[in-house]
Image 1 (cartoon, rainbow, N blue to C red):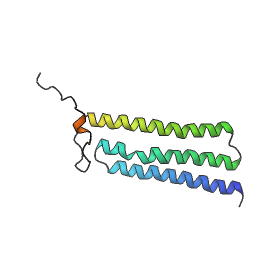
Image 2: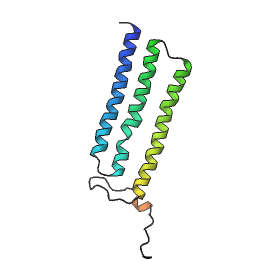
Image 3: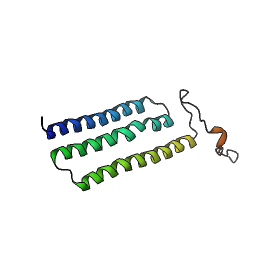
Length: 127
């Protein structure tokens, strides 16, 4: 078995594993009943699935002899950017979901920061 064949198999397995993270995450998101749980459920896809797919594509290009130094830098930056952007985005989505004060699913663990953060109550007196 040549390096190209081994690289193609490894790349395929990495991309398949990354896709599996997305599939499991999608099923998990569909099963969640509130927004905070859905945002939390996106973590496996964004933290593991996307980097595995990007690394798998880079390994495939490396095995085929098509990976340049610029491509390697781009893949590294793409993995780094995906991790940073997804963590910031999930934080902001979680805060927005919490601040909307929607009813949470009873299975969702309550807010551990509640004693430290007061939300403004809507003013309903001016009707």
